[in-house]
Length: 527
Image 1 (cartoon, rainbow, N blue to C red):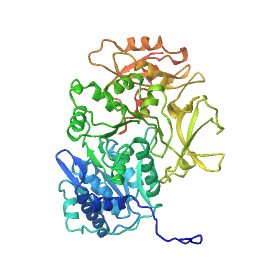
Image 2 (tube, helix red, strand yellow):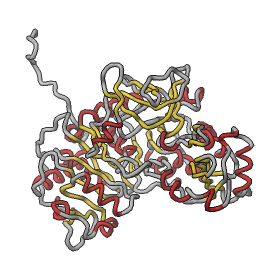
Image 3 (cartoon, rainbow, N blue to C red):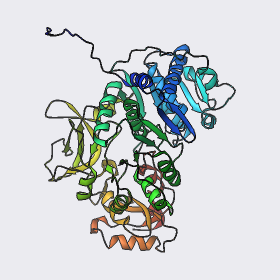
Image 4 (tube, one colour):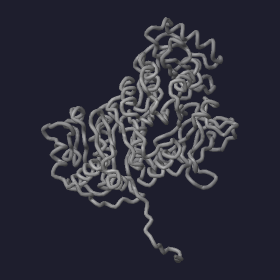
């Protein structure tokens, strides 16, 4: 049929995430949607439960576009609540459980949450501190508490029928708070439309499919877990969820439930491979592994390739929307690279003046993709600082990461701009030193920070988690490292600790380490 411009024979509107839940229930009603320990929910059960959550929220007086906070550990109920919030046309604001209580309150207030769902074990942290509409709509999940609405009593009388709320691609889906590696976490806003474009790319590049059994082992307040959850919803696949990650738990879960896909951070893989019983578990069901969130050192790469026949994809990405992919076979050839942008995306390297740099030169990574964030919530200055105006006239995202593109067109991430050490007017990338320290046989993990120095301004300090059975002391590690790095890269010392602060994605929170050890030279007489 021929039509004039603007006329349409059929309404070919795009289905947003809540619509996929209903379709999964229609066509895969009895298929497992979520497996968590001994508990299972089918897609039919998820449809009914999410409808009840949505209708209960509407019954509480919340409206389309209102934000709902979640302070919860991984559970089936958390997924039901998150997806139910979306069905009501509302916006999820999941909060990192590892932050201090005060930061948690500030994030909920920053999100302007009108209701909050809280796991029973987290309620005490927020008791008496939830004001206004949020305090009146505080829901406890998994228990009862005076002054709180019990989750079960809230949803039990609610209708299991779909509320029928229309979702526009430009509607906000969630406010996801950043890791806070350099300051107070910022609320990163994504819409339904750009998250759906994101999930299409994830499925394509990381080989997800409808029969996948997708492991979630990181807290659902993290973008690292939201990705596989959304993929599972779109494909009608099955989520296999760990309430809390342990190496042995991973091995047992993969073997028992025949997990096919998992996305984890380097420290998780490191702990799995260190388990003395790991070789006794059947991991042959694994089809696709993703590793990201922090640098992946050469020795761990080799061990992962040796243990996992499917190999692994290393990814570089940000919650704001930057994303790369490198296949397992190419990773073996280029172990220091993190790949190329997703199909349809682009990456460039710029200098401090915003001028584009040629291949081989290091500068800030900027990116343009179809799934960049809408912006930072309530942060106009941060939004302005995040923009690089490209030659095409569009706004590109400044990542704050230092990298270069090699002669093969592959991206290499060198460090965070704010983590770079300036010593005697020379730029030093901590990651270069970390790669050396981590090769020492008595080192489990090492990170490097800049500490104040009276002569050089800053100087590198190694923070090391040693092997319990190791013989090397702090001075030995320092001397060993300084024999293998350049003169400007020599570390002033080594500190042993088992307490290296990380965000949920495994990224080291160096600002806390700088606060802890910033006076190492003047305070301890080294240098």
